[in-house]
Amino acid sequence: MATVTLEGIRKSYGRVEIIPSIDLEIASGEFIALVGPSGSGKSTLLRVIAGLEEIDAGRILLDGKDITTAEPSEREMAMVFQSYALYPHMTVAENMVFALRMRGADPAEIDRRLTAALKMLGMTDYAGRKPGQLSGGQRQRVAMGRAIVRQPQVFLFDEPLSNLDAKLRAATRLELRALHDQLGATSIFVTHDQIEAMTMADRIVLLDHGRIQQIGTPQQIYREPRNRFVASFIGSPEINMLRGVLAPGAGHPTFEGLPLPGARATAERQVDLGIRPEHVSVWTEAAPDRWPFEVEAVEFTGHDAFLLGRTPAGRITVRVDPDSENGLADRVTAGQRLHVQLQARHILLFDPETGLRLADG
Ligand code: ADP
Ligand code: MG
Image (cartoon, rainbow, N blue to C red):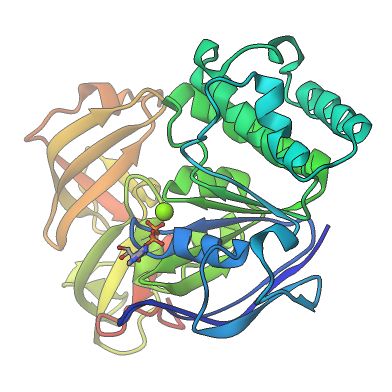
């Protein structure tokens, strides 16, 4: 087990600055998800940690020891990639221990580690097979096994589940997290998939353009996003974002002249108002606190149904319970005129200029 500390990491390719400056403290045994859009610098940062890329400035510490200039092989880290790159002519067992053999490790020790890893991965019966005789999920496990036998202090994962189909990915997510807990190592897991990040990580590090946008638990990231980017990146369907004027109003606050009782509005100002689809209530009847809502489309996913439509303040998506007693989700059709209310305590307010979350929002 080891802590990983990144101090003022800067990385450019030629004259293009990919990572302007990153500071990050990862606790021993922690599972960190490094998440962000494609091209945000996730793989670059992981490769920097692994020692596969040189940095322009900063320090990397492993358990407090400076490893900035250490060779990848000296770093006690093992990386698992999306493309497993298994040797097709070698068996599962040979693939898993190849690196150890190359290093001249003691054969008895290699055997002991192999047996343990195969067992841990449920792959004992497949030890003699070639990669071509395995499913995608099994090949992924071999790649994982190759890392496990090295007994690293830190596991570095670069989108290792991306090649698996949706169902297998969900199952492997759980397995991988359980393995992490069992091994007790520190894990840094790169993904562009917010669900993977949310379900697996102790803490999420959200990157955009090589900059950390927020570090927090999945709950913090979802409920208390620091800025508009974080609020919009995490959550599916995306959070509703309405730009308009929030005013204290007479009697109760208003947004674009529409009633917004319970909202915090001390002075009239332009805001970006964020509200998640599950935090909007929908009715068939009008009432003074409700906004008109014209349905444009209905999406039924099974455990959720979403109504996409138009309010006088802009388009929003609303989650409705498909199994609710009134059966609204099954009856509603495009073109129907309904009424919505934003749940005031869940409203998130952002500065339209800076994108930062407002202190009172
Ligand atoms: P992510 O993994 O988040 O998708 P990457 O770290 O792979 O992003 O890439 C971040 C940025 O760095 C991208 O704009 C990419 O084009 C650029 N980049 C990555 N590797 C290189 C390289 N070897 N040379 C030049 N640019 C690179
Ligand atoms: Mg990448």
